[in-house]
Image (tube, rainbow, N blue to C red; front, side, top):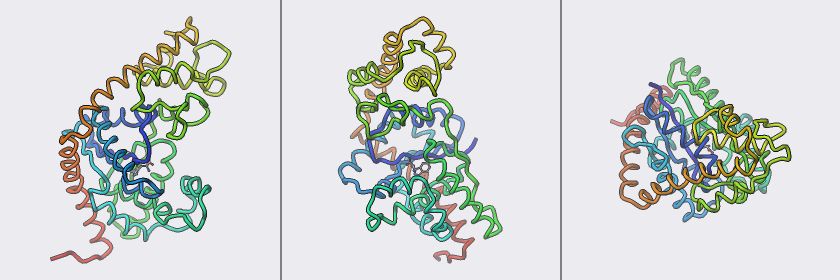
Length: 329
Ligand code: TRP
């Protein structure tokens, strides 16, 4: 039994890549571990976002968490902004993070390369400190994240070690990033050398997509001229991506799928991928529709925030004691 924590930032529509790389795994972990899954709504403010959009995205993720099988009786599901300890620990931890290491974060460099330097928000710079607080509050040993967040978890490790060393106590548990091997990177259907992300409607399958639309996207996915259903990321990125999707959703190995389609042409193979994607979407969407805008969602979030806070406050007190902040009497 280990504490596992992960979160999603509500800045866009969830994709099939999010489902395969993240949501599906969270539900698997919850039977044998203490799982904390939250929505990083404070992180969503680090770049300009429309309030209505933030609101809707946040609700959507809660509904999709539930639709994908997360059970509030096993896992704690909550919003970052509902548990004030995140902000408090973030404020304290900011004093132990160095300007230099923050400026070297790849995500910060990527996101700011397109911005006017005078208009870079401080929150974007300190983003990894808040993320470290998210993780450290729950004594999380494992942190499932996509490849792009690995560096932030490594920074969290550095901060935790630095802090423990400075106060000569094991105040924080040292976390580890967990990158799922199969399906960690679902690529765009229109350009399989790029990650499936929120910015390319043709190459992405959104969890909210009409299954008919999703089918069309798969049938017109970019492949190659070789006509063999074989996994070869380098030379056949499109087919390899479709194989990854197929195998993740069917819970089978790549070899099993290669065997299944050894005599098939690309049309037949794509149809099989489209079938499993569509039935997955139909299933998830039916449950999503039940949950979205229901009182049940509010109850889940209330219970989740209470559970989270009861753990977070113990860690925060440990930190306050260590640095010498006085207790209230
Ligand atoms: N930064 C993550 C992302 O962009 C979201 C996130 C915030 C997170 N805090 C976290 C993920 C803590 C794992 C653990 O996707």
